[in-house]
Structure formats: structure tokens, C-alpha cells
Length: 196
Image 1 (tube, rainbow, N blue to C red):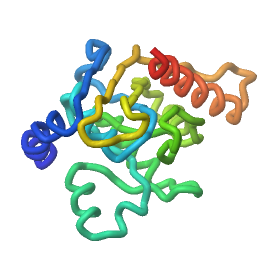
Image 2 (cartoon, one colour; image 1 turned 180 degrees about the horizontal axis):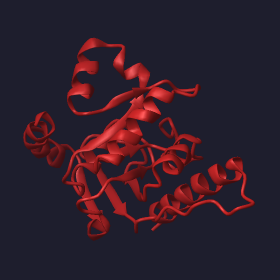
Image 3 (tube, rainbow, N blue to C red; image 1 turned 90 degrees about the vertical axis):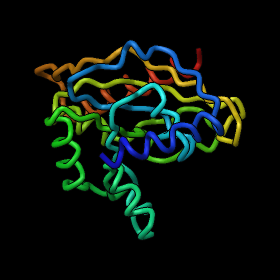
């Protein structure tokens, strides 16, 4: 409920301060859980993504954002949850899997941090681990700002790619190889969208 209220309140401001152009919204699944993956440039990314994606996105966010009480309240109220970076946070992974299993949309920035150049980087292993546990499909999305990084009144181009179906590992594929395959394929597709 809070997410819907905030979206209704914040949406006009998003359109005022960010000129969002979006393409491929017909690729967004309906009535099923999936993992939304996008490159990460700014905290404004989550607002830019809210333009084409109408439903609630439950973000896995870095734990540092939850140390400041007002921010913790805000992000928690929006349905986001903390993940401890640099370590195997099984609690966060369990939470992520629960969201997908219940038909929700899990939002992840696979790079794990913001890009300093504005270009998509390399994915961490978290996205692959969650995909392997939930067998969920992945929706790749690219975000590109006209100014390179986010600035007020810049244009944000959001491109939604085709859903990447979960592909189980081959019999002779190791877990490490599966993680590399999934992570690479997701970021390759995001890069392809970003470069259009």
C-alpha cells in the first residue's frame, strides 16, 4: 500500500526532474515472479525504473543504506531489504527467494555498486545464486543518462529487454561455471541494450 501511495505522490516529481524515455515495456511480465536486473548509476535509477514498471519492485539494497534511521524506514516501507556486501548473506538470499516464490518482482543491480563512468560493469555472483535457487526468469533493463551520470533535468533512457528464461546447468557444468554463465549472459544483454 505504501509503495502505491509513494508512487502516486513521487511519480509527478520523477517526470519533472528526470525526462524518462522508455522502450520495450511490452516485455515486462505480468502475474508472475521474476528478477529485474539493471545497470546501476545513481540512486535515481530506482525512480527511473518505476516509470515503465508499474508494479512494486522489491529491491535488494546495500546494508549501508539502512544504518540511517530515516532512510531505513523509507526503504523498508517501500519493500526493500538490506544485503551485507562482501559476504554470503544467506538471510538476504532467503528473503529474495521468498519474494519471487510469492509472485513478486525482485530488483537487483547485479554490479553491486554504482558505476563511476555510467557504463555497465561486471556482475557479482548474487544474481546467479538467486536465479539458480528460484529457477526464476530474469528481465534485463538498461539505464542511460544523457549526462553520463544522473543530473537534474537530464534525460534517462530505459530499455527493457526480452525475458531471459532460466536454463538449468548441464550435467557436467560446475556451480562456478553456472554462476559465470548466468552473470555474464545477464550483463551482456544489459550492455547490448545500453549501447543501442
